Every structure is written in structure tokens, then in C-alpha cells.
Image 1 (spheres, rainbow, N blue to C red):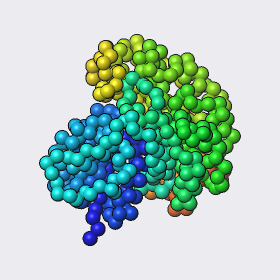
Image 2: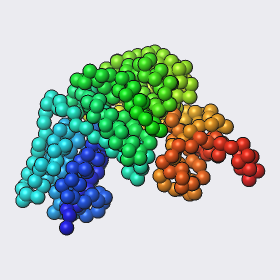
Image 3: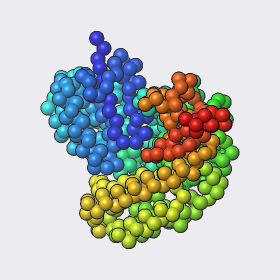
Image 4: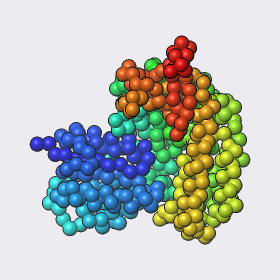
Length: 442
């Protein structure tokens, strides 16, 4: 019988893409892939280190796998493993700890040697992470959207972030390889390709091609598809990229642009590369060039030294900014960062209070953005699955839309009219005056 492997991923879409690569390695070596809560011969956990919760979850998942099959080989890899291999090796049940380079050679390890008392650790130092490892994946149960890794590592030194230590310096995939992978994903039926990496706007290191030029290559590929940019730093979102997005419908009218704080004092402590005035200018310029642009924002609350005044600066700044939604993170002390040594620690309850306030603001802003599209025509890429008689999908500018289920809509584009919005989901009807009249009459 085939040996079984179960894989679990914590963290970002980049991690999911790399887990998909690992799964393919196991398949090529004769394994069967099973769900992580099933009995397996090998359990692989690809970890994150952005927050303390991710590390705590790692330990819980390892214990769960060990209970499912005490005799299984348990492998922990990813960013947490890269930064704290000895700590992971001390978790009861872990057999093998692999760094962010080593996980791409996972099939080279003999996973069924007689178990010893100590875990095996194989982790290249962060300074040695120089090779680019390609990867792409799809979301679970989704044959519509795929994630393509184009870049890895980061040369920025934000005071709160461990990613440069876990991922190494910025490096990029060969553009020819990326074009081939992009076409292969389209051939496999995917209609939306999400470009992912650690700092994808920095694409171009070691390949003599910048991110804008890579986008130009992608939009020249024939076919009906969309390109979504997962996240891009404000100092790297150039006029060329904005103009290309405006002129080419293949690039989604949607950017996720990290801010982190609306206070210049806190931005300076964070070692960010801009001031709030720079960010504000970029947002208004982007909205002027692309009026229906959807913008998501990363923001951190409870950073050391963030007084109530600083927080209110952030709240008021975001309240008045024409953005669609916020991704709110509660500051979490991370080892090996400068921020952990900074004075002015914010108590946990206050961090959570600020988080809740910004999450409520995010809901309000998303609802306002959605309402601005009521009675307007939008094009939706509908996804697989049927829920309560509806099919769901997203517009180019990241509005979630539901529509009466029809089989032929699965993984296809359709222009519809938004009629209402509720709980951040828009309802839509056929883009046909007679049909809309009938709907209005019931």
C-alpha cells in the first residue's frame, strides 16, 4: 500500500504555494495525500512566525498529529523552523526540522529510519538563503484561483518583522520560467493568477527585469484571465504600474498596500520607508487614475510607544482615506527584532481594544465601498461550489458577489448588476432590463 502524507500550512499565501510544491514532491515519490486530521505515515507542518499565535498553533498541531499516529514521522519546516529550530526540536514527537531551503529537498530525507531520542535538524543559516525555489498552488476546493510565487526574501529592515531573518535577502524567479508557469496554470483552467512573494514589488533582483516589466509580459499572454497583485509596498507602487492597471483589464483594479500606522512617530519607530503624507498622496493618486480601484490596508495596533494619541492619528487617518478594507494585526513581540527592546509596551487588553475599533471601521468602510456599486454593472469571476442556492465570486476590485446558482457560471466571468449589499456580500441580478423588471416584481 502507498504510504500516506498529510500537510498543514500556517501563515501567508506564499507558504501555501510552497506547501503545494512539497505535496507534488511526495506524489512523485509514490505517496498518497490525505487530510491532516486523518491517519498518515508522515505529517508535514509548514510554519509561520509573524505572530505568537502561529507559533502556539504549531505546537498544538504537532501534538494533534502525534495523537493521531504515534508512529508517524513528523516534519516541521517553514519560517518558525528557520528561526527557532532547537525550540521546535524540543517539542515531543517532532522527528525532523527543516529550514526554508531544505523543505524543497524533503524527498531526499529517509523518513523511516529508526527513531532516535533527538530530532534531526537541518537548517541553513538565514545568510545562506540565496537560492530561489519556484512554487505555485491553488486554494483548497478552488479551481478558479491559483497563487504564483515570483519573489522571495526581503531587504527591508522593519523593526517588528522577522521575515528577512526567516526568508533571507530579496531574490527573484527567472521571468521565462514564470511565463511558462503562468501559461501552465491557465492551461489547467485557472482564470485568476495571484502573484505572491515576500516583497513582490521588489521583483527584479538578480534577473535584470523589474516588476512592471514582468507584468507587461504577463498581460501579453493570450486568453481571458485576471492577474491579482497580492500585496505591494507603497514605495514600490509606481506610476507605470498604475497606468498599466488602468489600461489593461487583465490586471485587477485592486491593490493591497501596507500602511502599518497612520502616525509618523510610529512609522519612524517601525523603520518604514515613508511618511503618512506620502501614503496619502499615493492613495489619492491611485484613485484618480483608477476611480473604481479597491484598496486594502495592513495596519498594526499596540506597537511599543503607540500612545492613545498615536492610535487616534491612525484611526482618523484611515477613517478619512478612500480605501476598501483593513487587515488589522495586533502587535506581537517577536524574538530577534529591534521592536522587542523598545520602551512603551502596550498592555494586551488595550491592544485588543484598538484592534476591535479598527476592525469595526474596516466593516464600515467595506460596506460604504460596496454601496457605491449598487445599481452598477460589474464583471464577476464566479467560483466553484453552491451555497444556499447561490454561487459566489469576486469582482476585479475585490467585491464579493452572490448570484443565483447556475452550473455554467462555475469558473467563468459574467457581467451582472449589483442590487444590494449585506454583511459585506453584494447580491446581483442578470444584466438584462427585462430580467431586472421581473426580479423587482417578485
